[in-house]
Length: 525
Image 1 (cartoon, helix red, strand yellow):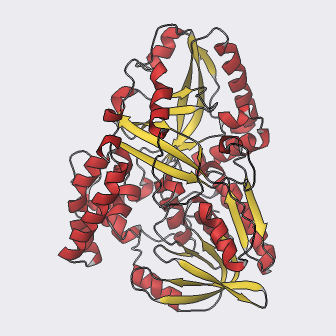
Image 2 (cartoon, helix red, strand yellow; image 1 turned 90 degrees about the vertical axis):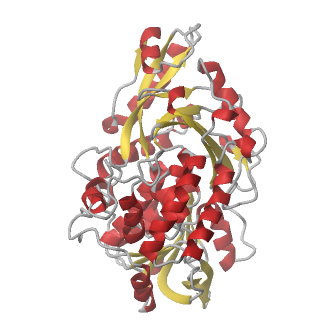
Image 3 (tube, one colour; image 1 turned 120 degrees about the vertical axis):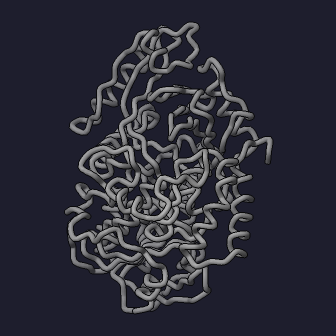
């Protein structure tokens, strides 16, 4: 099935009209709580099977973990080292599907593992050859041994002293927040309904069965009682809170951890290839990746019991990243070179497990409560589609819905073109550039145009400056200071589109400025 079939032209997603549709009442087949990767994947899967599906997100789509990933669609060389072959095999298959179904957002990326010891080449070469083997028919390129000269050509800023060569292998890179938006639009293309800034306040439980949710519009306070055949809890690190809304004493599933990334200028790793640091002080791997003209470095893995919406790096996490990459680069970045720093929380399965979070599985878990609440959590971006398939298979049984097969393996997502594209809007580009301000950047440091801001408001449900500069465009993650400078112009354009006044603009710029300071250079905090 192709999402383009029957798709209307790039139509406006007007919040007032969407709320009016919600007020129409009636029972939904499926209600999904959570607008991150997993929730959006579940909504697309359910709506593509023909089920009447509603998704509710408390904040903005991909506001949490799903916009704070390492931007990789990959099998996971670290999971290979841990011996988790089924997860690696499944993820490599999903990598292939995403390259086909979202070629405007997911692209091949070559990684190079430098070798400074004579045992490194056979050690890493053997492991990556096995990585190729596990991909089977889903392979996207073979690993190969590089001599020292070829390794320096690939990674020009690498330290040459003692370099014996390297191993090159292939994985894929993506823009996580924009893939989430493509899923949201695909859900609408398929007849579904999704609303951000509409948090769920509780579950409706009657005769011991979960058959609805209570929610409210965060902008107006209007309340809703929504009936459904089944509720899918896809709220990531907050999944246990929704489970407790039904059963207050339920045992937790999750042991969250935090991953921190820093972003520096592209000069620290020029070229198209990424660097894999094969072993950090805590036995993990570290990625140094070219991303949208900058270099993304990460990540850490630190246990975290509190669950803030805007997690901050803890003492030592930034230094850990900088120290881990320093032995590999001729001029390693310092704190003064950081353009932005961000942290995300991982919903790891393992409550009660005393193991370090870095050793916990990245596999997912699907649980059905006594009252029929379907919770899906764990996993990672790469396997979101497979997680959604299994979740909706389960939800159909719980709700007694028609047992319709999953069709998302070959479902091209909104904006997908015939082949790879460097434009994250894909086939929607013409509609974007038909709006006022096409080609006119909002700030000299970014490619974000005035037309793209208008498109974010009209067609991507952006409701404020952060929505645009953090997720519709990645300015906040690329350069926090530059994003702050762009905020007044973005606010002005949004005010025109959303019918807001000067006081709203001032408040939005102030809110965004306070947020951007948390992403800025550490010494400026």
